[in-house]
Structures are given as structure tokens and as C-alpha cells.
Length: 261
Length: 238
Image 1 (cartoon, each protein chain N blue to C red):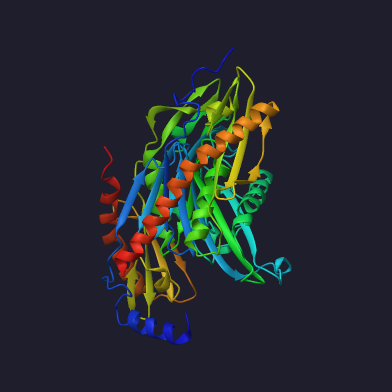
Image 2: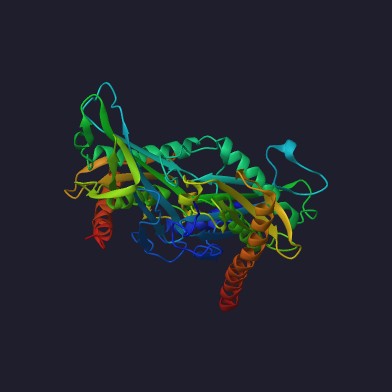
């Protein structure tokens, strides 16, 4: 995008309008397809408009960490696959990809949605390890929320594999589902001058002054925060951003619960 | 012993269920999805674009570079660590070689065409599904090409020649197995990918290649149909 285009888009955004005529607090159409990967123990494909990601859950049996001998292991990883954007490259994860992974991880971990003690098989010897991998397929903005929601959808779909001779038999899944006691919903609010929007398109996202990812629980409590980009936020705008995130999280939470029996 | 019935009940020449879609990744210059049975592949084409690292530049023509990557949860067993390993690098190379004879990059000196292949689930034949998807994605991106490329694995399970092996057949333990991924330029009838592991006689191999040629006509139909579907979408918009 050239400078004239940028200035024009910024004018639109600062005036509180969107590039695709949405309202400032309107998400794009959310579509979730669970069970899209038969090799994963749980999986989900998630679309937010044209943003498209796939999340998969793999279980394994591991030796616990020495400082938490009676707790299972949770690992969350986002891969900015070069399939998804001309800006993503193959090779070791960029700083942006690491931030993305960690913000998704933090929301899930700090919510304590997964009872890690419940994943212990034999204290000090054997625990379940749960790996959630999220791979981007098309980046049309707001990967933060898309990846966080996809991780939840895949975890809701996950079933433990059968254990044969102390090893998981991935060909046979049991009926035992992974229990999620909470659905920590990330909603990232983007700031342009004094106006706030959520779920930006790629073209909108790159122009933001600052963003704030707010991950909230059904009680209204906040379990993770991340301020992003180099702009600053006033306490007043943080108040508004959290308010907006809380409002949206309720809708997204019920969307995630839909279709689940 | 004889392999009388395939593990999934298919006929010996029968392909698994296929699905192809073109234009699935809006940000890419060209893209496609191709699945056969429990193996599915996305392919995205970016380019022709500037070549990095620069030493790869070729002043006489553009360069094709394919990247094959399994998603971490796409293996039949344990989680696959992300990032390229030796296997992925080799498959990336043979995929590039399989597609190159069908495309012409002389119009794009010094530029590169990147093809990224990503697999959400695999049940054998992943490089073949990747090649089928990549060929469609290159066509979608408007890269000059003489024809489409298709790929399928053929092989031997015990005493039978089989087409489109699934994972349980590759892992068959009661007799010898040979797994032979084949890619072909349809019109020329020339083979652009050929690998094998396992044991097979020359006669059986040649029979397997004939069967691959026949099977590929079906894959070609699926690819052409998906491409036509994509053009239909464009017509509707106009």
C-alpha cells in the first residue's frame, strides 16, 4: 500500500469507519469445522471472514517436569505458515510468531481451563502431555483471536487415545474427552487515534497505532493481557477496550458452545 | 500367502475418494486443496517475486522452489516437530523436480515462484497429494505451463499390484511391500517423479507403472473439473 492509500485508510479508520462497512464492534462471520484432521486427537478449522487457521491436538505420555511432578504438560504453538501470507517465511519462527504463540498460550494456561493435575498418570513418572498446534492457512487479519478460538475449538474436540503397554495407540481413541472447565476468549481491540475496532482485516491491522488482547472468563474476570504495537494507551481507553472485549467474548463463547453436545 | 482383499475393501485398481478445490487461499497468487482418502494437502503459490537469498537468482529464467511441510498433528503416530527435517527437504526437492518439466519460467528471469505445501492430515501418499494440489495452484496463479501434473502412489502388497496405497498397506507385515510414488505429465505421458522403497521385480514394477498411468487419467479429470469450477466463479462475478 502506498502512502496516499495509507493516509486515506487512516482517515476512514480514525473517523470510526471500517474498510468493509462493518460496525466498529462487529466480528466477521465465524465458521468452525471440528474434526477436520483425522490424524489429530482433536482438531478444528476456523474461519473469521477470510482469515483461516487449523488447530490440532496431539496427546503423548511423558516424564513430568521435576518441579511439577504431579502435573501434566500443556504446549501451545502457533506456526505462521508461509502458505498464509506473502509476508511469512519458512524457517525459525519470527518474533511476531513467537508473540502470537505466547499470547494464545497465556490465555489458555492462566485460565486454568485444563486441569494439569488431572493429566497426571503416575506422579514423578508419567503424565499426559497435550500439544496444541495452530497453523495459519490465510492471514486476512486478527490471527491472535482466530488462533486462540481455534485452539479452544480443537481442545473441545479432543479425545484421549487408548493406552497399550504404557504407550498411546493413536489408531484408537477412547470416549474420554479432555475437560475444559472454562472457555477463555481472546478479543483483541485495535486503536486508531481515538477510535477502537475489533477483528480487523489485514489492511486495517497493519495501520493500527496499538492493540490490546484481552482474554476473559465467563465470570468477567480477565486472565491474560497483551498490549501490542508501539502506540500508547490511556487508562481511559484501556477501560473502553476491556469493556468492548468483554461484550464480544460473551457472543463468541456461546458460538463456541454451539454445535457441541 | 496372498493379498486377496485390500485392508480398506477397495478394488486393486481403485483410488480413494478424491476432492479438489482451486482458489482456497485468498492471499496467495494461486492456491488449491487436494485430498485423497485420509491425506489432504493445501498448496499456495507466491510469485513470480524477488528472489531471496539472492544467490539463487538465475538471469536466464525464473526459479521454482517447492516447500513440503506436514502440520505437527498430521502424522499417523507422534506429533511431528515443526520445521523442515531431512524427509521434508527431500520431498520438497522431488516435488520441485516433478513440477518443473510442465512449467516455463523463461518470462521471469531473476524471479522466484514459491510453492508452499501444507498437510493437515496424512494417510500415505502425501507427496502425491501435494504435487496434485501444487500443480493446480500453479495453474491458478497463471504460471505458464504446458499441462497439469498428477501423482499417485502405486506398488506391491504381497503378490498383488495395487494403486493408491493407504498407510495400513504401507505397513503390511505379512508379505513384501513396495511403495512407488509416481508423477506424470499427462499429455506427454512422461514420468517426472519416481521413487520406490521396498522390494519388487522388474515385471511387477512395469505393470505398476502402467496401472499408475491409468489411475492418473481419473486424477486428471478431478483436477480439470476443479479448475473449471474456479473459472466458473470468475464468470459469475463478471
